[in-house]
Amino acid sequence: MYVITSDPINLAAVMADVAHPGAGGLALFVGSTRNENDGRQVERLEYEAYGDMATSEMAAIGAEMRRRWPVLGVAMVHRVGVVPIAEASVAVAVAAPHREEAFAACRYGIDTLKAQVPIWKKEHYADGSRWIGACHARHEHHAHDARRDEDRG
Amino acid sequence: MTIRVLFFAYLRERCGAERLLTVPEGASVGAALRLLREQYPVLADASLRVALNRVYVDNTDPLHENDELALIPPVSGGSPSAGTEQPTPCT
Image 1 (cartoon, each protein chain N blue to C red):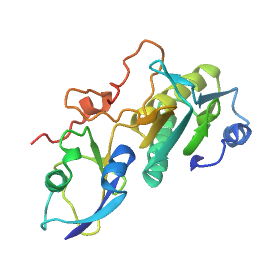
Image 2: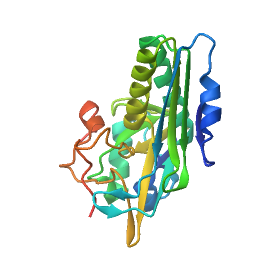
Image 3: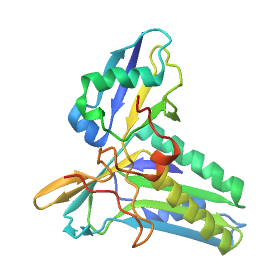
């Protein structure tokens, strides 16, 4: 399953989706909303997705995981909208014959999702809010900009 | 010809969620971006990737009638572990 949802993530359903009789290990990564960033108190987080593209990018990452490791099941779910502190915002689950492959594929899945999938996070503070990564100064460098820089002309 | 342009996150707040844009026949993604930068100063210094019909593309890719061009600001990212480089906060 590759899902963008505004509902709380049902982790049991995510694990059930990847369950497989040939699996000796299921790895589950859950990203949860943190109450602090850069020394500022975060009151709540808000996520926005380019939904159609987000799910197709997730599926492409899942296909790459299956190409690299003997993966038997992959699930990725990202929540959008306002997510209260300490709730799951993203989950990646992998089933594989052995735990090493399950851990490795799951790690690759969440890292690549974070870098590639068009989902944005807005932190709300007592005194304002900001989009994470939304700086638009030319001196700013993000990993993905280095890979495919935009036209400066 | 006309294409649909989508904005997200802080760009959506500044430019609106979407609009139609008329571009010359055979125009590239880069040509559309130049037109948009003339109309939205916020894009001048924006760090962007672009997606055409929900796939990341380069500026040289050609546009076609009714294409969906999305301007993708840096995604939420997140640091894999403490001590890795953080995005520069906006002020």
